[in-house]
Amino acid sequence: MRDINMTKIRINLLRNLFSKYNIDGYIIPSNDKYMSEYVPDYAKRLEYITGFTGSNGMAIICKDTALFFTDGRYLEQASKELDLQIFKIFNLKDISTTLDKDTKIGYDSELFTYPTISNLILLDPAVKPQDDNLCKINGNLVDKIWQNQPLEPSSKVYLHDIKFAGVSHTDKISKCCEIALSSRGLTAGSNNYMDTVVKQLDDNTEDFALVILDSSSICWLLNLRASDVAYTPLMFAKVIVTSTKLYLFIDPTRIDAEIIDARPEITILPEKEFENILRDSENIFIDDTIASVHIMDLIADKKVQKITDPCLMLKACKNDVEIKHAIDFHIKDAVALCEFFADLDKCVIPRLDHGISEHSVQHKIPLQARGMTKTITEHILGLRLTEYRAKQEGYVSDSFPAICGFQENSAIIHYRADQKTAKKIRVLPSIGQGILLIDSGGQYSGATTDITRTIVIGTPTDEQKKRYTQVLKGHIALAKAKFPKNIVTGANLDILARQYLWQEMLDYPHGTGHGVGSFLSVHEGPQSINLRNKTVLKAGMILSNEPGFYIPGKYGIRIENLMYVKENSKWLEFETLSLVPYASKLIDVKLLNIDEINYIKEYYNKIKIQIYSLLSSNAQNWLNNEINLFLQSLL
Image (cartoon, rainbow, N blue to C red; front, side):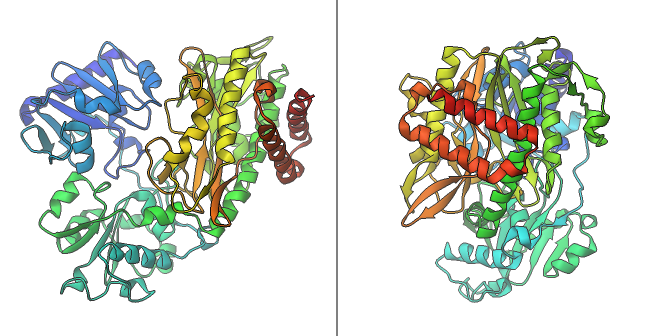
């Protein structure tokens, strides 16, 4: 938790602006103007005011109170990061019942969509927000008080090779236009995207404008990447496709000659020109769940067709090339993880490990050239894991900051270890005992990975083994699921992973699975596996399978693999991508049935076939020991 005085000063500076704008409060979301989950430093307004570092939250600062809202993943984290003398913490789902209807709330219209405003603030979501209780404010009030605010990102844009993308950008654009037109009952007239718009759009074909605002969609659509935010290769930009041109709105200095030569059909304009081009359009196709209130107000007098971003489902259903690279890079990722766990196993026996530091990582100092350390912390484990991934060919970055939580910190679902306060796992000659949860992932040139393993340092309790095995049984049940095409959603399958916890009236406060991109966002929609998601699962989708169990203040368990949906005759099933063994010391085999035992055996056989020969002798020994420990427990 940061200095309480800093938080008070910033909140008071914000409140001092209320009278100028005639408001009683101000909403601060975690997203940026691109509606991104993960935002660059300049847009971390929620963190600047509250100290909260999670990816989903919202604060409402009123004259006399400060309210904070987040989802179940972050409630425990928020209680530790926020000063509870200042903030009252609520679940996001309760936001509409928390505010006084007569309170006049100000908000930045570039950071909210109309559906979000309606769902979160109004008691009647059918009513469009009016100025009598919600006040749009030009400019962001946090920006007005933020001294030394970082600049907006300006990373260079680079090509995403067709050998990884599998489909050309022109084919993607054609398909997106076709989908947009089909929402009006129209048909495409050509495979060339410039000829896709047909004469059926009233009398003004040239005014057709398909607006793409989601950064991940734009990167996918144009086969381009950048580094505008840590851990995700995004470029923040906007796109408008018309019947004659494709406009990319971005700082032109970020686009070099290679991209101009490779994308000659793209007209590059500064982002400030976006509104001018939009105003000149008449037939506008736009996703209002992504478009801000500000953008929707600009086109209020136009012919607007509200559609779902046509990139979303196309991007979610990976093509054969993307699936192949997902398989290949998960093998590399598994090698990194197994080498890491083998190293960790040696470290906690105990033996001296090679010391590492942030300086060592930044300057790529070889392990053997580093000094020795007697201490291992959660923070050091995260750095070490990054080192092992960085050795793999095609590695670009981690896909999110590694979550390494020991003992009670493992119960914080999105815990982030701080160098100064990280728990010590070992200080020679003593070794800590308890649950260690490690959730991590990598960005590779052709895939994005995400995997969680929970292990135990020392001897587990009977309760810990029981809960781990219940989570594992749910994880296996979902992995083994077979289901008919064109019917089943993530909501239909979620219970498979929760069933063994539900039998004892236990649960976990997060979804069971999320979609994953292809060298893009580690959290990708529209598909997910939770109790609410209604997106029909289709072949090629990549999802996580990550049930868990958490006792705040004691320990947490989560087991996560990535898997993709594949066809099996007229049905669909999952194929697991992740290739790292489970924690044998935490498995109570007496709770497993024969099908579950056989599943684990087959999974371990798959692991050995695909990665054993790629491992060092040390990691091979670790893998053999982990597998043999499970097999021996069956005797």
